[in-house]
Amino acid sequence: MSLIGSNDTWFVLAAMIGTVALGVWLEKKYLWAANISALVIIVLLSIIISNINIIPSSAPVYDFVWKYCLPLALPLLLFKSDVRKICKESGQLLIAFVIGAMGTVAGAFISYFIFKNYISELPGISAMMTGTYIGGSVNFAPFCIAVNVWKSIYVDYYFFCFACNNMF
Image (cartoon, rainbow, N blue to C red; front, side, top):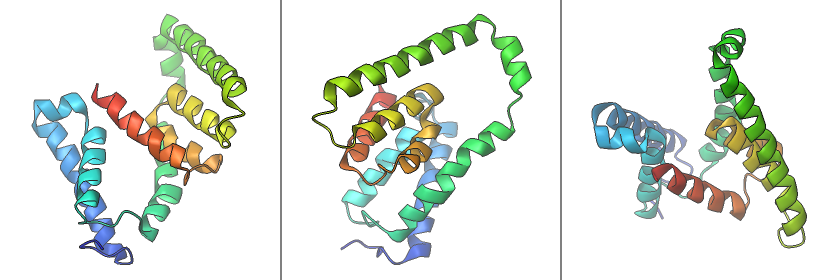
């Protein structure tokens, strides 16, 4: 039983917003925080306050944020971008990115055929990881939802590895 109940939607939401605000503030205020990024700070703070039973480990508001709010982040970021300017100024870097993206897709196909008999949700996980590696971490939630693996134990494991990877 946590200090904030799972059905106390407004309190859980306030804790989420407060954690995000603290992570962003720490990143802007301190160099050590800027080196590990607000995202990692937010994930670690969330893990800590969940494990010491301040916030619940599952709540209906988490599902709402995961299904509706996070997928909106990608279009909102893209609205600010100028695709023509990006193509013009990126030059050979864009070519390198496309080659890297094709390598990531090829790696996903190869790993799928190697591990398909061992992991039942591998098609969705492969799509999720490929989209995240190519497009960035902002694609993680939309891909999880699109391929319907967002409540899988593999997603929890991947998110933990993703947070650790960002720290190092």
